[in-house]
Image 1: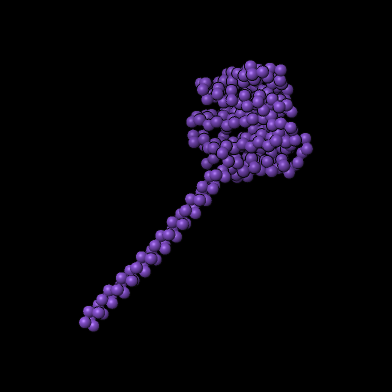
Image 2: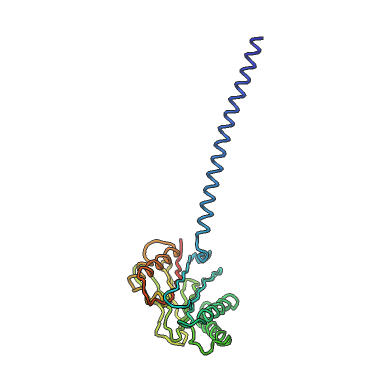
Length: 270
């Protein structure tokens, strides 16, 4: 009997030891699940904080971001948008009438017309002048047909990146406000001509892949000098951070007569 009892007790001790081992594994399992949950939570938070208008074109590998600020002007009169397709990247900034309430309506109408042309109308990437001219004329017609014919024509800049070329169209009405900058190495080049009035000017620039492209409205060009813009675009950073840096520098200037600010930054990512 004592021997049988001893064997029984040994069996119980062994069972309790296994229970303890299972309990340890259960604790480790719970810790792993909690750790993975925290990682997923951080990833979800990062996605939510990531600006909605930040995208990356999967073919061209261009990342882009845009911001808008309202300066001391009574109305926001600017509108912008960026579209990405398999073959190209399209960006537009339109400035409507300065200091007038219909300005934003004019800008939005022109942007939607230009986006529609880019999205639905075929074009020859080797002859962008024809596409730009037709699209901008349609935008002006849409503005006129919707009761804004007596307003100052909007200032428009459109950019299409395709086949390693930067294609730019600009027309400034009487505002001479919007501009495109190319930052290559340590050199900043304004590739638009704000002296152009009414007529549509088209230019085409070969890209090497290491450029940063900034589209900017008058609020940027009047607030920041060349050194400021170089500060905004220098260093290794994502376009969203470059936009935030631009916003910070403009706010630090605190210009009382500052125009509305619109910035779009595009950069090829590795």
